Length: 219
Image (cartoon, rainbow, N blue to C red; front, side, top):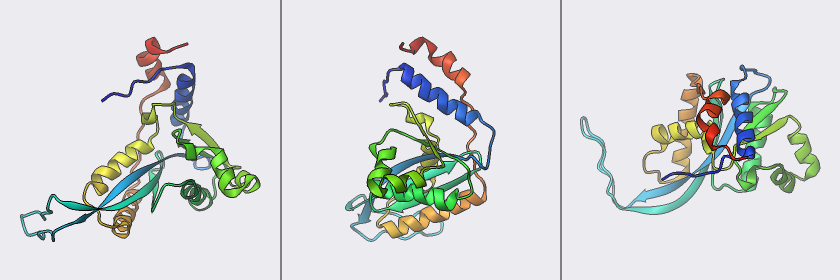
C-alpha cells in the first residue's frame, strides 16, 4: 500500500527545513530531538504456555484475550545516540505535555535550545500546552523550544520512526499481557542502547530530495 501525497510548496519547505536541521553538526547545547508515539495492544494467553527448553523455543497458543492498550512515547537524539521511552496508559494531550516537560526539565535541562521534530498530530502543537498548562506556564516551559513539523504524509522524515521500528523488532514483537511487564522490558532496552550510544546516521540530503523529487513538485 502506498501513501500518495502532493509535493506542494509547503511540503518542500518543511522537508528542506528538516533536512537542513539534520545536516547541522552536533551541538550539545542545541539538541535535535525527534519525537513520536506508538500504541501497543496488550494480549493475555488463554492457555498456559509451554516453557522454554534447551533447543526448544517456548510455545504460545494462537488464541488470546485482549487486555487493553498502552502507549509509548519515544524521543531520540540521533547524533548523540540517546533515547527516552516512557510507557503510558493512554495518549491524551496531558500525557504528551507531561512527556515533553520531562524531556525539557530532566533530560535536556542544560540545553539552550531544544529542536523538537514531530508530525502533525493534533496534540503536538503549542495550543495543546496552553490548554493543559495555561498560557503563562506554557510560555515558560516552551521558551527554549523550536518546533519542526514534518510535511503532511511524510512521517518518514521523522527519525523517531526509525527508532520505533527498531524498538518494535527488538523489544515489542511478542505478546505482552500487562503494562508493567512491558515497561520493565522497554526500560532495559533503552538503557542498553543508551549505554552503547546507538546513533542514527541520516544520509538523505536536501540535494538528494531535489534530484529525486523535483519533477513532482507542485507550484
